[in-house]
Image 1: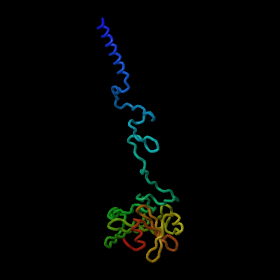
Image 2 (image 1 turned 60 degrees about the horizontal axis):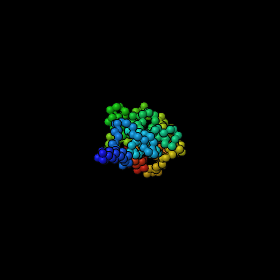
Image 3 (image 1 turned 90 degrees about the horizontal axis):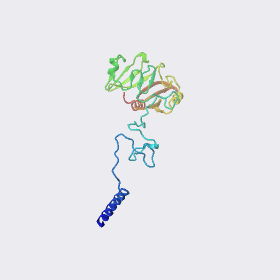
Image 4 (image 1 turned 180 degrees about the vertical axis):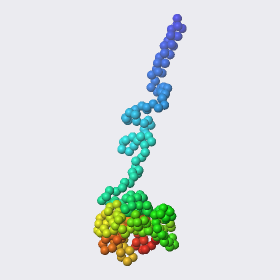
Length: 237
């Protein structure tokens, strides 16, 4: 009988030990299985559906969508409105209108186009060549612009016809005061004998308005540096 009571007591103590082990706060148990693709649980103190692991949010508190394309620095330059502060066409845009002179060119006579391409297309007449420079006339359909080439590429366009204007309406005969109003960011350039011109840069190119008797006598387009040096120091082609 004594042995039977002892056995019952041992069994009772064993059961109490098992129960105590089941309530042990240090026992983490078996990790839960996460199904691939399932949403992560809400993070304490965060928003439901927030990425697990504390991933950083986009600036300003908005979450960036995976694979989203950054917008910073991707805006394209738009053509300026007439009468606005930037009065010329966007830098590098080819001129395609036959009666509008831009810093980038006039009609098919785009700054930098190859002389041989214009010749093969029948867009220039006889060419006069001197060392690395060449000159020619454009077609009457484009007001017969004077063209200057350097190393086989179009470097300068000069227009003296009133049939051509700029995008803002400047043309041969426009007053000097009006040209400065149309291109307020420009500056005056004087040549080696004191003749003045208004110089308006547009990207790497520029427009130059040669002034005589306080009016535009001719309009030129070409690379800014080459155009400036040709006017001030009679350098280049």
